[in-house]
Image (cartoon, rainbow, N blue to C red; front, side, top):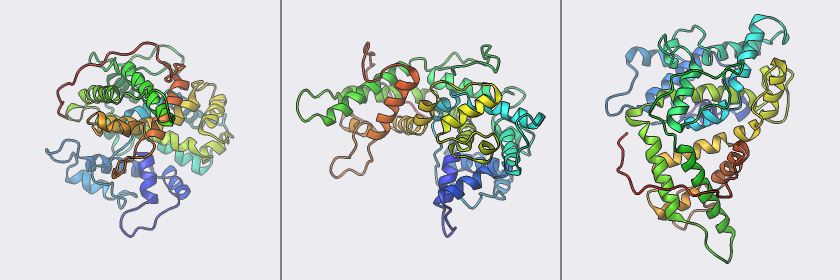
Length: 376
C-alpha cells in the first residue's frame, strides 16, 4: 500500500498538482500515522473484496477517512496492493525486529542519540503501524485480544498461503510460537521453484538462434495453473485479504524508510548506497544482524509481487499465453506487457536468497491435470 500511495502522489487524480518522487516519498514518510491508517481504510473500502455484498465501510467510517490528509488521492477502482509474497521476503530480512529495537532504544533512552523532530514523527508512525501504539482506530490493524501479536498474525498468513516460516524466531532466537493452521499450501515452494526453472529454460531459448527448443509452454501453463489454484484455495471469500493488506502496509513502510537516507537513517548514522547496507548498519547499531541474503530478498520483493499477482489473475489461461511469463516483447497485435525481465530477476534473486539454483533442475515436480475452477 505504501509504494502505491507514493505513486498516487506522483500521479494524482484530477487537477491535483503532482509531486516529484522524492517529495512524494518525503510526504508519506513524514505523515501523521492516523492519516496513513485512514488511507488504509480508504483503500480497503475501494477494493470492495466482498462484492456483491457491498463495501466494508459504513457511513461513519467513510465520513472519518474522508477527513484524512490523503483523502483527495482516491484509490483507483479495485485498487491493488502488493502480494503477500512481497511482505514475506522483506520480513525475512529481519527488518521488523531490527526496527523494533530501534524504536525501543530511541523511546527508552539516548543510547542511539537524540532523534530529530522528523525521526520522532517516524517513531510515532512506526509504533502505530507496526507495534499497535494506541490510536483512534487500533482495531483496524488486524489485531485484538484474540490475536494480539501482529508478527504472529503475519506468520500465520505466510504459513497458510506459502507453507513457509520466516527464517528466524524471537529476538532471543527461540522458536516463534503462533497459531499454525492445518490447511496450508505446503506444496507451494516446490511448484514455484519448478516454474522458475521452466521459465529460465524458456528465457534461455529466446536467445537461441538455432538448436533444440527447450521451452515447454504446456508445462509452464500447467505449473502456473496449479499455483493459481493453490493460492486461490486460501483466498476463498477474500480470506487473508485484510491480513495481506496490513502486512504490505507494515513492510512497505519499512522498505520506504530504508530506500533512501531518510531522517531515521541519518540519525542512526547509517547512510549508505543501498537498502540492504542501511539495514546492516542499523542492525549493527542495535545488536541484531539481518539475514545474510537481505540484498537478494529486498531486490526481488517488487518483482515477486508482480509475478505472483499475475499468476493469481488468470492471465495465462492456456499454453498459448505462457509467453507472458518469460518473453521480453509481446507478439504482434498484443497489448499485454510480458514479464520476462520480472521473472528473470525473481529467478536470479530467489536462487541467491535460498542457495538453490533455479537454473538447474535436480528432480522434476509432478504436475496434476486440469483442476476445477475455484470461486473466490
